[in-house]
Length: 211
Image 1 (cartoon, rainbow, N blue to C red):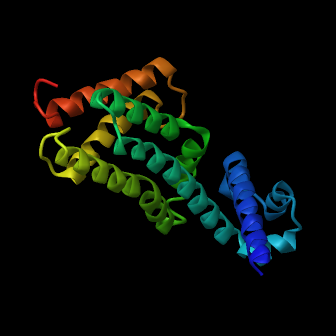
Image 2 (image 1 turned 135 degrees about the horizontal axis):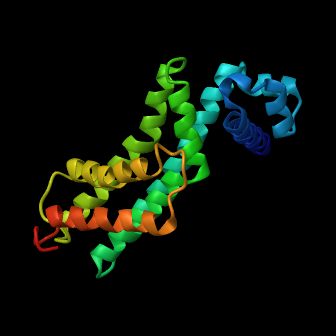
């Protein structure tokens, strides 16, 4: 029984991954269920049996992609659980890694598809945001709160501090990448991360203004 359930879950995950690849490549309107089935290596009826119609496939594929992005970012933020003696270096490393996830192919495609279909799938924007930016901000706020308790940061409102750090990262990256339409050179990505942390520590470092 367990093996059967696991097999069904694995097949569903494979279908969702294939569907996201097709939607990324073709866009929602041009993507077809037969192409998705071919990409997943399943018969078209299997696709319908597992997920239903094209709208449902699209929404579930987008949610699965968002969950993957979220898991990658939360794993990065968890590195702040034990930042070591050099908090600035730890924050710069985390910031840089989050930017790399933000700019990778999956995240960029997720943003493009979400924006493109916001009118047709208004609830999708909410679902993607909840799985990515909102949960990331919550996880980061938790880490920052613990750093403040341990004296690594000054006393602050963790949710606000997390929101501001993420804004310091995403705003310049969106501008440099022209809303995800061009690749940002590696040295610029690292520079954005370092500048964001420098500004953040000026406000929230234990000796604010001298960090």
